[in-house]
Length: 236
Ligand code: SF4
Image (tube, rainbow, N blue to C red; front, side, top):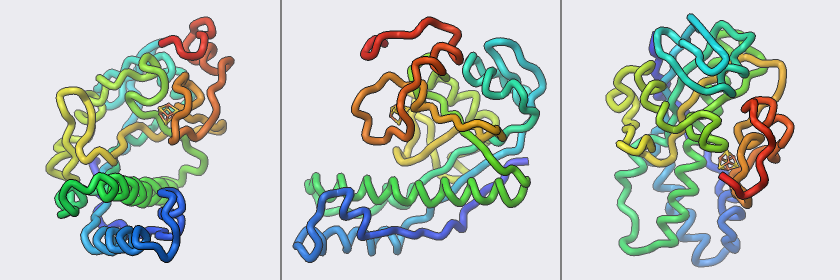
């Protein structure tokens, strides 16, 4: 059954967001940033849609989830001992894309993007707590099409993931473009699964200097999960 979460509280930590944006407290920039925070608190409606789904078949490189086939040896290995997963899309909400920002103010646009990311964080955390509370899953990990090296779980499989969730655009306003990106840009899609061990796609990503990295690259894990010899950094 597809479930929508659309009453997600928006909690924005203005101080840490300003720090991340390198804005001096008590400055003109701080005032301008605070007015964007106030705007976000007034209009942001982060949301999520998810579906409890079951694995029907699997091979070394594929997993069939409620009739939809995903092709990824890493996904197949991560789900080797799992029968149930949660397919999801979470978003900052398209209301934030309709905000009137000061025209041609690139800094304000950048700040707004950071605030959108924080609103997405509210949706992601809320979804995670909801799944833990409702389904009694304790420790979980996630995989996202397009995260990590390109071959880990190809971004093209956003199409299959969205097909599990029905009318995602109608339900929570997230659109999938022809290049498999999501609009609003601060949206995340993936599969949540119960696991005893930590897993982050960043562990399987060669990209250097990524500001969003949550875990260091792990050569051994990359080789183990992909079934390929270790690649040299910087080589796609
Ligand atoms: S290192 Fe960056 S690009 Fe690579 S998976 Fe992590 S967040 Fe994505």
